[in-house]
Amino acid sequence: MMNYSSAQNKKEFSFKYRDTYFPMVTNTEEFKAEYKNTPLDETWGLWGHNLPKWIPFYIQPNSSVYALIDSERNQEQFCFSSEELKEILIENIEKRKESYDYYMINPNDNALVCQCDKCKTAGNTKTDASPALFNLLAELAKDFPKQEFFTTAYISVKNPPKEKQPQNVGVFFSTIDYQEGKMYKELPEADELKTKINKWKEKVNEIFVWEYTLNYDNYLDFYPNLKVLQENLKFLKENGVTGIFINGSESYSAMQEVKAGSIAKLLIDVDSDLNEIISTEVEKRYPSSYSQLICDYYLSIQDDFAESKKSMGIYSGIQEATKKYIDVNRFNEFYTELEKASPLEDNFNTQALLLSATFLKLEQMRYLGVQPNGYATLEDFKITIQPEVNKLLKNLELLAEKTGIADYNEANDKISDYIHLWNKEIIQKDKTNYFIHQKLKASSQLDEAYSNIKILNNGTYGLLDYNTNWLICTVADLQVEMPNQEIYKEATHIKVGLLNAPKHQIYFPTEIIFKNNGQENKVTIEPSSEKEKKTIEIPVDFNKIDGDFSLTFIRPKNSNSKNAIACDEIIIN
Image (tube, rainbow, N blue to C red; front, side, top):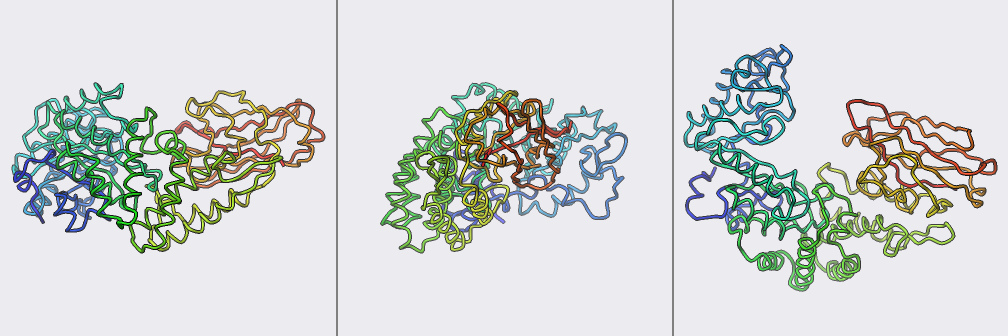
């Protein structure tokens, strides 16, 4: 293994520690050599929340290695005042110190904090593990002066230690709370971010930052934040940050080879000409016959992203991308030209780019619904699917097979499932909806971020991603008032699409109540622990409806969660 601490001193780089984490691209020997990347698996003897891997199998559940919580040892967390834990750490570091310079010692990924007498004497509170943890890091730093020891400013370690730490103790600081797709210096919270970094800088010698460069809900989104990232790297460097870890993706993400190469060069010299870097990377990665097409489009969306005042977080849907940087007409022109050129090539990067663009085009059409450039047209309450949709779905399937790209986001959702859901939830859906674009209003309080009630009858459908085409309610039961229309007499049902996504605390409602003129019809919905979409049908004899009617969606009662419910399209047919 290469000793990176000594290697850093051979040249003055913008950052001492630099890891652009896109393993499909950055783990090759060629990339490491050309871009001076410091991959984590060759740099860190211990990384992330992997401390449990060092605990021997024979350690008993009641061992002092584990945190004391409510007077009992809890294997879900560690006691950082434990002499037994310290000996385990020393033994493992001794085995690795000739190969690895860096060691990350973190609490487990939860809010538990040890309350033993030693930890409380060190200064631990029920929410702050920093005192005991930094005492341990200081001791290890003294025992191993050539190694560097880090923890992360995260959950129970958000406060700097009270005492100045040894030179070889540092902290990893995540900027996840400031990810809006904007330059840090332009955020209202810019001074807050500076203050947090400087408070850590007063107590530790090294501050490394965990940075982000993708839309983790859609790896196939271009998320062109390189110009924003360059300015943010300058901001961090000016405020004393000495290392950067770029949180990329282990599976494929759109134009990852260009993004990885460009970022790696910025970490070497943050003041480099980014346009020149991107142009060089595109020319290197794509055939000359259409590399200029790709370069021109990629540079243009970098500008659009950087200049836009709209926010776009790192967990976003297609609507945020469209508002932030996607000009629909220009994207469609780019897609047409790329599609013409790419079938002639067997180049992985090109085919993967076309796959990303095809996925993005389908998402764009799903979001736009029956509007221009959407997936369908609408006439006399009848929806007609655009012929292009089936072609795009078929191309997506073929490109996924050809490239071997199976997942499209951090949650490892499958492209094959996405295609299946398109067919099941959109193409095979009811083609007649008498309720589309009819008047409706919410008589219950709506969430500030989900206040567009018209999403319930605009011809757009949600799939399993919560952030596209869903109306989400967390503050109250949802009640929708619906004026009666003469045309409804041709219908026999009301149908409603619902999402269950427990990871995001979104659940099926327990009941849907149809109300009209004092009469009620209740439909009970069984709870589910699965991530799934369900369509509920409510039989209605509209010939007996007297005046306006309403639907009430009852949120599940659970004090441990926000009890969100999500609805997409209401259909009357």
